[in-house]
Structure formats: C-alpha cells, structure tokens
Length: 378
Image (cartoon, rainbow, N blue to C red; front, side, top):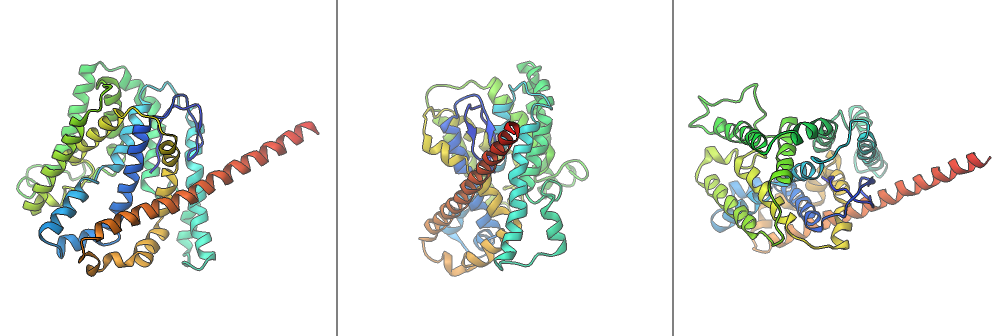
C-alpha cells in the first residue's frame, strides 16, 4: 500500500513520480510502520492468529492480542489520509494527473501479469482460464482493492481539491463532522444489537468503509488536517497518548461486548478513524531527515502488491507459514517476537523484489531512450 504523497524533485522509486518538495521522514516512517501493520493484519486474518486468539486463547494472551490487533487497524485509512493531506493544495487538473495514474497502474499490470504466470512456470500453482483473464485487467478485476480505489480517488482528486480549498474553515469543519457522523457513528450503531433495529444501513452505506465513499471520506479528512490543523515544531506526544487511550477503550468494549466486537475492527469505526488522525498528526511532527527511512519507504507499493496478490497470499499463509494456524505456536510467550520477525522478513523479501522491478523499469526506459535517440540521428 504505497502511497503517494509528497512533492519531491527526485523520482519516487516505487511510483516513478516526479515531485517538488523534500520528503518528510516522519511521514515516511509512518508509512513503513503501516505496511508492517498490513502484514500483521494478514497474519491475523489469513494466517489464523485472529480466530485462534478469539476461540482458544484466554487471559493475558487474549488481552495482548486485542491490544495489538486494535492498534493495527489504521493502515488503509492512514495511507489515504496522507494522500489527502499532501494533495489537497495541488492545482493539478485531470489532464495533468494522467501521467501519475499511468505510473501507478504500470506496476499493477506488471505484478498482475508476472506473479501468476511466473508462479505457474515455477510450478507453484496452475491457473484457471478466469485467473489468466483477470491478470490482464488488474484495475477492474479487483486484484488489489486498495489500488483500484486509490486510482479512483486520484482521478477525483482535482475536483475534490477545488471544492475543498474553496470552503471556509467553518464550512470544512461542518463537512468533516457530518461525514464523521454519517460514515462512522451511524455505521457503528447500525451494527450493535441493541440499536440495529432503529438505526440501519441497508442500501445506504458499506458498513466496513472499504469502498469508494470511505476513501473519499479519508481524503477529505486528510485535507482538513493539512489546511486547518496547525503543525507545531515540538513533538506532539499528546497525539500518541490519545492513540493509546483510543486503542485501550476500543479493546475494553471489544472484550466486554460481543455485539460491539464484530465492528470494533472496521476501518470506519469512530475509534479507528480517530486513531488514524492521531498517528498522522504525531508523525508529521517528527522533524527529522533520514535517507535510509525515505529509501525503505519507496518499496511499500511492491511489498503490498506482492504479498497480497491472491495466489501469493494463499501460498504464503497456508503453505510457507502454515504453522501460524497451529494452536501450539501460541503456547510460548516468544510467539509475538516470531510474528514480528515474519512481518519484517515478508517486508524485506518483497521490498527487494520491488527494487528489482524498479531497476528493470529504469533499464527499459533507458533502452527505449537510446533507441529513440538513434532513430533521430538516422
């Protein structure tokens, strides 16, 4: 889930996007941490940690799971918040974002084609006719729902920016409050057993927030943070404390209310949305420069797309790390550290592959450039 996000004169190596301002290492560090959270969430969902924790773990083991799990619900929305934060002041038109959209789509197409067919060549899997067809259309076939939604928001962004920057602070605040009530508060009460009979969502909103409206909602909120929440020079640890407090309250509600626990992890849950805001506001206050952090952050797109491609995902969590679904794996207190090492290992391996992809694209670009020069000379 790479994204986006800054104006930098250098070329963003993962999207190959030319930008105009120096990358903020605090935000880049946040993006790296969010990608590690994405991998952890996939361990919970696809690796079986979540189901084992809820059914078989108890006491402190279960409490630890909920605290870590509910502190890791932010990555998808954080990426779009950051996108909105850095893009809302852009004056780009629909024509001017065509290049950016293309350079985002090309890695999608590359991985969508190379992963399934190369994997079949190596004997990892056999492709069905439908899987082969889907590989050629990653945008519409929803190979990666996040990338499809991001591109849609990118297309809408020039129009959103004009509308949002035209609003006064009062009007923008009113808009954010209305959206928060509609897309976060309403969705929670519509799914709690005690209130679901009179507060309903059917044919109105997607309760999980994993749809276009949820991403536009976060883009608008990110723009508000940029335009109307001042940034201070000192580290705003109050935001980190608030993040921990929100996580703790969400975990308590989740543990003591079975009805609430079903929606405690939804992206647009009010606690999760506020957690996202706290993280962005805290990490933007980290005023430091690190070439290493900035360099590592450029592989986020590839890390996400490689390990979350559905064929790789099945192989990764069912075969290579299948022991994660074994209850005995969680019998020792060393398992959290093993899970952390798995997250780092997946990030590292996929990051290396992404760098190879970048170098390959760069080599092809140089080759075509030289061919073009030779033709002009002839």
